Image (cartoon, protein in one colour):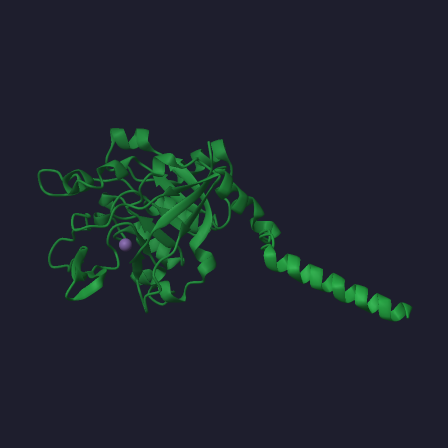
Length: 290
Ligand code: MN
């Protein structure tokens, strides 16, 4: 008798629980512990997201190599349909673009020194995200557009801000991003047509690839090397050294002036292009709100 009563009670309770759970959506599951701060920070505004990407359009400046070297096409959109007979309910384009156009990612296989190293398609996705350190050389660049980062540039930064962490993106803040919509100002050519813009060089690249363990470097100019790297030995020494060591490059970054010196996390995910030597990329940074 008592057993039968208990059974009926349990059935009634189970029915009540079922009824309640049907009428009321369950609470959202909290994010797992390592990500809870990020999710809550994004929702509350304690974490800001900075877009480090330049606009991609027909005017986006592209690197200009002298003859007889081949150059890349820039970005050209081609309309497929725009709510018309070719597609009454949809708008879409196809595009013509080089791998190294606008804000983009340089993979190790881009350079002769890294020709047997990974292209974008085989990189592990955990290689696209890391802490950012921002080395501000806007003062030096204002004095000298041909500024090249050296070992001393990096070491002086570390004296003030601490050792560059493993897995870091090392970003050179030059102010050059403000010129990105004006090709003339961006390449800054002299009377002979030689461009002048700042970047990394042999010394900085050698130090960062042998004495630190970074993901790669980022710049605001058209390439990760300074313009004078074109006539250096080896040519484009930052490319030669970084990619030969399996490291990456990010170029034509925007809004670098909005990054803290340390404390940002940069995410740069290239397209998974088969044997891609690089890829246009939407680079973002997660930063503590100031
Ligand atoms: Mn490139």
